[in-house]
Image 1: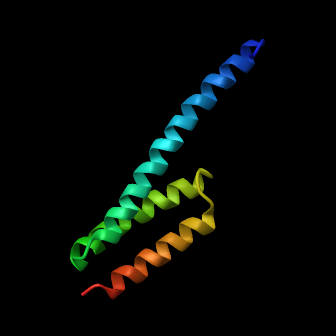
Image 2: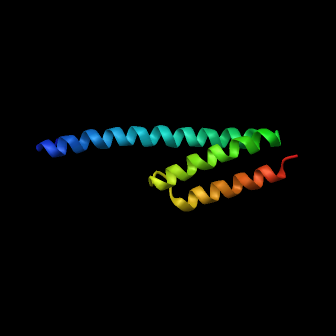
Image 3: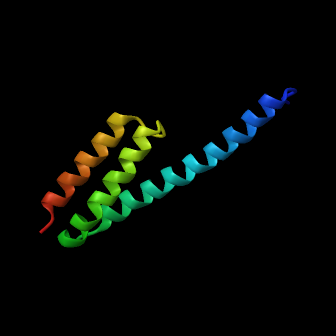
Length: 84
């Protein structure tokens, strides 16, 4: 276990950040699933900017890779264009 004050603080910070990252990542994954399950084009177009913002934020904070965010955004856009 950590012996220095700074190391103890680092452990606390890491735990907090890890919990926050897990929550945000799971929330974004659920939003992507919800968007993929949507069959109504108007609703999907309304959800897309929110989901894109979530993915961009995760990529900016290095929770997910920027290319993964780009790939997800692209595939979601293609999915919406196929809807009627």
